[in-house]
Length: 341
Image (cartoon, rainbow, N blue to C red; front, top):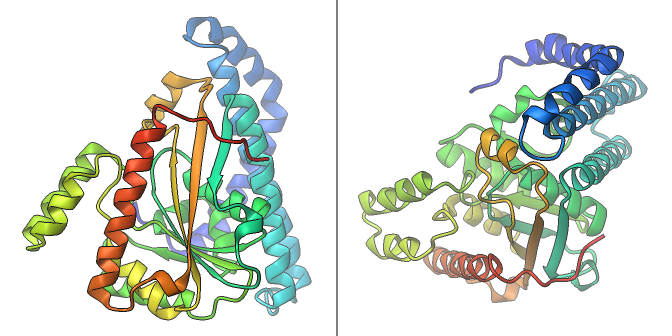
C-alpha cells in the first residue's frame, strides 16, 4: 500500500506513534494481566506475553527515536544542517542503538541465535566501500542486515527499500534523513537510476544494500519470476532460475546500476536461512517462541573479479545466486557455524 503524503506522515502518523507508546506504558499493567490470563489458552510458552513484550519494546523504541530525531532537528537549526556530516553521523549512531535494542530483545524473547560464516569484519578491506547484495526472505532480515553492518562491520548502510515502509514513522523519518531510497514496486528504470545515484559517491565506510530479488521468497513469487523470464524470451535464465528452489530469480537492473556507479567497490553477497519459512503473521505466531538459529554467510568479491560487460555481469549474478541457493539447501540440514556477538 502506498504511503500517505509526507505532511500526513509527519503531522499525524509520527505524533500518533508517540501517543500510542505513552498510552501503552500507562495501560501496561492491564495488558499484562490480559495476556497472562489468555496465555494458557494459546499453544506454546506464553505466546501472548511474548508478543505484548515485543510490541511494547518496539513502540517505545519508535517513540524514543522520534523524540530524539525531533531534538536533532531543532539542534540542526530546524533542519538546516540535518544532512551535514556531523548530524548524519548522529543519525547513524541513533539507528545503531535502536537496532541493537531490538536485536537483543528479539534474541531473548524469541529464543533466537544468529550465526555468521564467511567474511568477518577483519577480512573486509579498510576504507573501501561495499555493495551488499542480499537474499530477501523471512521476517526482519533487512533489520538484521542493517544491524550487522552497523554493529559488527562498522559500516554506514544505504538501503534500497519499498516505499510502503514509510508507513512506519521512525523508519520514514530516519531513512529519509540518511542517504537511502524508498522505491515503489515496479519502479523500473527510474528505480535503477535512483540506485545508481545512491551508489556513485560511496566513501570508505559506506555500504549500499540491495535485495536483487525485489521481495521475500514465496513459492508463488518464484513461479511468477520464472514465468516472467520465459515471457521476456530469456529461456536460458528461466531454466537456471528453475533450478534455484530457495531464492527468487534476481533482477539485475539495480545490481548493474550499482556496479556501474561504484566500479571500485567490493561486493558482499549475503545468504541466510533459519526463519525463511515464516512468511505470514500466522506463521510467526504458530512458531513462538521460535527457538531458531539464523545462519548468515557473507561472501566477499574483489572488484577485479567482476566482469565489466553487462551480459557477463548478469551471468555472474545468476552464478552467485545459484551458489547462494546451494548454500541454503545445505544449511537447512547442517548449521554448525560459530556464533556472532
